Length: 301
Image 1 (spheres, one colour):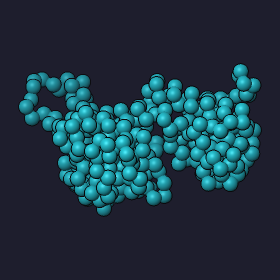
Image 2 (cartoon, helix red, strand yellow):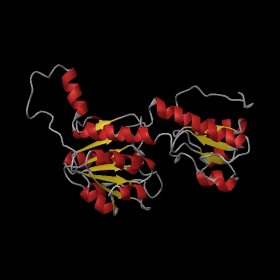
Image 3 (cartoon, one colour):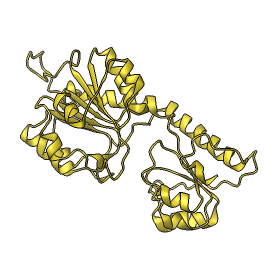
Image 4 (tube, helix red, strand yellow):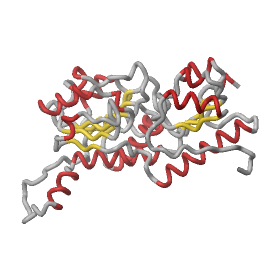
């Protein structure tokens, strides 16, 4: 490398376990990690100096432990905003208009004539978009909703100036659940947000509502979600992430009103290139004694 860095690339697709990561942490000073890598206190106490996460989220990293052991942690928060927001809208449209099952129907040769009652979906214009989490991605999803002439309401601990400027209402979680025709999840996974959407919350939603999750699977209690879909508490769901990822709740697999994707929110050439550049910039800044642009625990410097 031009900067004199000795780089080793792990080429296996199966995520490493804690034992393997701890071994690598003893051998290298910097780890470039993915969201599937368990960066535990054991890993962080093995001599590593920096963890450069190639993702926006970092719930796989024990950040307090990293700070205790003076390990710098960075992420790539801006690189995947557009790609994940667009993927969220792909899910919304696919669920609302039955795109996946209509595609399958056509491919199977079952399309014989135009049918006035086939695959009747829901228009989004004039409907209500509820956003949980008004960060970069949630805000961008809200901006796109305006093009569909949807009204906006959102729940977040901190008000969003940008969403407010678009006419969005900053309301309670209960209000979002009750009023949203489309509920889109964009919260980080924390102890407070784990299983935030359970049976109680799903029962508050409209029978015609759809829920979309491109954030973290464990925000939703999937057993409760399955019950809600089977009993008609909500109309449909679109998920890119799962509670026990990569495992998907078996009951979801057989539901025609659910669209399921294999965690591809950031899977665009543009986003992955930007993520790679952001990781490199964070690492080079650290090596050169500068403050990494996306440091999560600056107190260790």
